Image 1 (cartoon, rainbow, N blue to C red):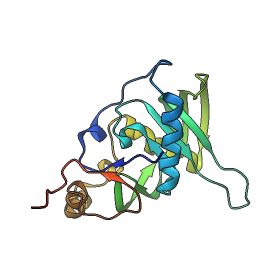
Image 2: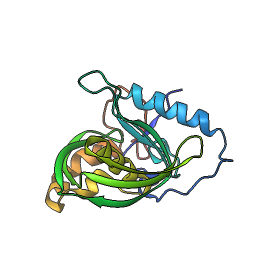
Image 3: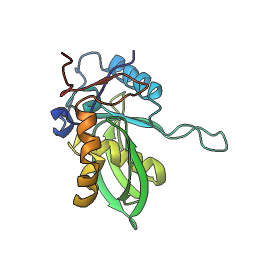
Image 4: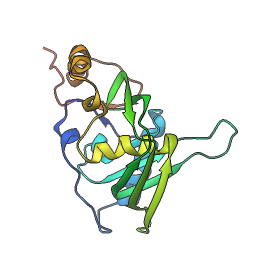
Length: 186
């Protein structure tokens, strides 16, 4: 089932997610719905806060590589980035909760992450390149951070009218969104 994606301006996007346990209701269905939602919106990652749930859950699927080999696809529960290393590099990032805005964001290329998968197996994994970047972006969501928090004050000022329009629901997307500040039509 495709779920509405929470738009910029909703307070849930600024909350630090809570850990969950194996008794979290309908978790397998929630994960399946998150993948459906992410694929429908043409995303490569989706965090639970983006569908209105302030919990430490996110998914990643970078799709097939250019040579047709499967990309990086995983579920992350109660994740914790243990280490970020390497020379920071810029990459043009976007976000399903902040449609039509893309910015160059600097991140380190290598991470070590500890997480539980959907079967509650614990992993400690070294990840690099694009998958590391997507993980860092989604991890920021469960920490209550957005990629726009990483741009300069000047750049954020320049984006203010676009961000305000998104928060008010004055944007069209191919996927369903939920707007906390949508203007009421009279």
